[in-house]
Image (cartoon, rainbow, N blue to C red):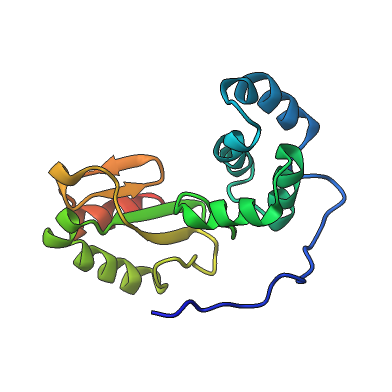
Length: 174
């Protein structure tokens, strides 16, 4: 399979006057996170987590600010943020529906759950509903193979999920 590339090297980053990586966040990271790591670069993941937990996603400006803060190349921050499924580089919905698609969940019917969610919400996996209420994600593994198929709905893990159960949980979020 060939890589699909796009020339974004010179694409401008929309910037707001106020930084995403605030002085308070930097102070917290310098006091609580950086001392635990041998280099600033090694603190990249916790820095990205801090930004995402604050805003719900990681804006392009924040990636650049994290690179400056940690003295690493912006491309390295972007590479890391796009490698891990847990980082969101676009705003996500208020409710996050994550369906595991590991081999155990595949054998136990995750595809039915995903198809039914796509039909119910009118979006594909990786998309957010127009009203900003739901984001649907198919993940590689939730680490709950003994309870396949597994779904992470917001911060709650559900195991041995049936469509009826998942639909009821989604409806309860309204």
